[in-house]
Length: 307
Image (cartoon, rainbow, N blue to C red; front, side, top):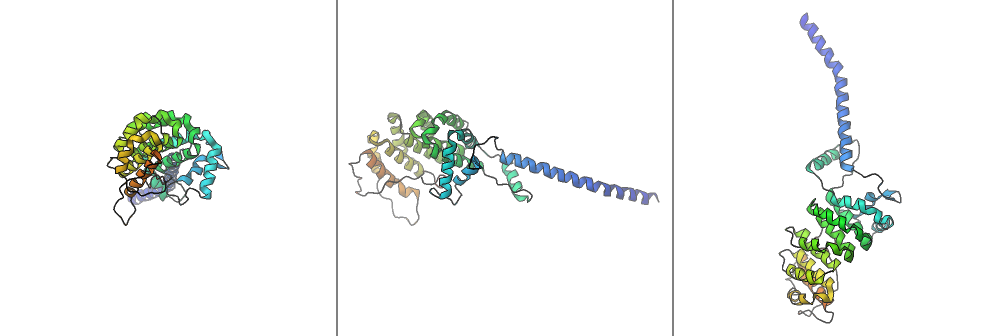
């Protein structure tokens, strides 16, 4: 009798606790979802808006994985949006350039992608870095006042991708980023190939202080990484007649590579060297007697696609 009473009591307790347990689980799931939303979005209030879209939404066009290329209607519309927002975009671009993803954030992002209640578009920090750097294509010299903040963000060493994107931004600012030359000269010997190549390329686009930069670029022609060598050749060409001392080294690089069935960035180094020689001395001809049309290519594809 007492056993039956005890069973009934326990059974009744189980039934009454089920709704409470379900509510607790639902509340926990809801809290987790809101936590995910907070971690994965992290948008700053008062973000610039143009044409009814926030800046970060516009910049998704610059995602390197997007099928939309430069010159497309969507890309031109995004350029126009950045142009209209102007330097008001810089605080948000700096934030995007600094972004990194912790292991926890990536794990939460993967979890969020598996739930079906709320659709979450997660953009990795590495993609945001690139999207922000490309906005400086439009801002150009108008963003020169951001150089000190870009240098500060670079020194924070948030990630290799962040540093490479900041070098890209400095490159697009051009001569207005002259104060960043010492930083880029130091980065030109960085252990990472991507950081090193982008720094060399940026030195050419800024093309200031030739007496200091040209010797560094000549040494970089012997770099073990083909992307760094290509960037150094491009940069020397940007210095024009101020890079006369680079002619012998560039001439050595103009020998055509062996024919390969698959395209490689290595194949482009001799072409870029000839291109640089023509810029340094338009009257000179490469030893091979061959010519090629001028072109520019980003040093570390596909992370930073051809210009």
